[in-house]
Amino acid sequence: MQHRPLLLLTRAAHNTCMSDSLRKARGLLLGVAVGDALGAAFEGHRSVDGDDLVRQERATTRLRYTDDTALTLVLARHLAARSNLVSVDEDALATELAREWHREPWRGYGAGSREIFERILTGTPWRQASEDCFGGQGSYGNGAAMRVAPIALVATGPSHAIELARRSAVVTHAHHHGRHGAMLQACAAFLALNSDPGTPLDRQAFLDHLARTVERTDWRTRLNTVRTLLDSASPAVAASHLGNDAAAFTSVPLALLAFLQYPDQPAETIRYALRAGGDTDTIASMAAALTTARTGIQALPSAWLERLEQATEIGELADTLAERMSPSQ
Ligand code: AR6
Ligand code: MG
Image (tube, rainbow, N blue to C red; front, side, top):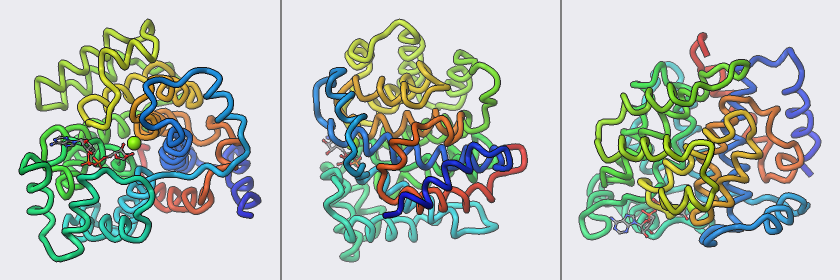
């Protein structure tokens, strides 16, 4: 059992000796994994009711993560391995992602990603494999956005986060929506990580900041829709306005809304994302990453962390990346 070291890790998070950057780094990476693993049971459901949620929350079974977390960990290790040069090496990253798929292909990968990884491992250059996908359109799935959160831990500012996200996305997501979803999620993760949990989040300013950084009008319109749904929209209403499938254009804004509804309560963020149905693992994962990057690991229910596979290892990887966070974080 790996529960004991994990308990030490999470108990230590309540200790005032632990720095905020460590708490937030662990929050961000373990938030990805917990949201993903809790949502995996409901992926593809039209909606999720309260009884389903309670059963999932109270279960004692192991929480298994999916491709969302598996590829997030690949990107996190990729960034951790580049000590002084904070950058993304597209050639290396493409191979690392493809090898991870090959190592554990049963984690629930999207059809487009599977095809791209197979081609990369059999010698096709990543750019060609990525651009050829879906009849030459490239993928607009949320696979690049779902893995991007660790970039917030090493980026020196929002623009840097967006640039690193773009470079990490193109190796699998050549369609502009796949890429822009990753860029928006990385920028949101950076802003959430660098927000002060002791002060109420200024949600309008948060959305204003994101709107200033997105290049495309259609994505700015999505952010305006998120704005109109703040506070009043139930998860079902939010899903009906934004969509909840595996496209970046639908799921990234819905995850952002789930975060903004409960920016200081990761469990509520996750419940909101799950109740919206659809691509639940990915939406809950992206939403939880934002909330726990802001609050830190101690706000995530320890019962969930104790059920999560490889939680100790994920926490240790977060610690390595926390050392790379700039002093202001
Ligand atoms: N044309 C039509 N459908 C598309 C297109 C396109 N250009 N692009 C994406 N889709 P994929 P991902 C649809 O396969 O982004 C896991 O379950 C299509 O239905 O490139 O890595 C994770 O948990 C395609 O299968 O993989 C996430 O939920 C889907 O979008 C998700 O998969 C996903 O795109 C991540 O998927
Ligand atoms: Mg999914």
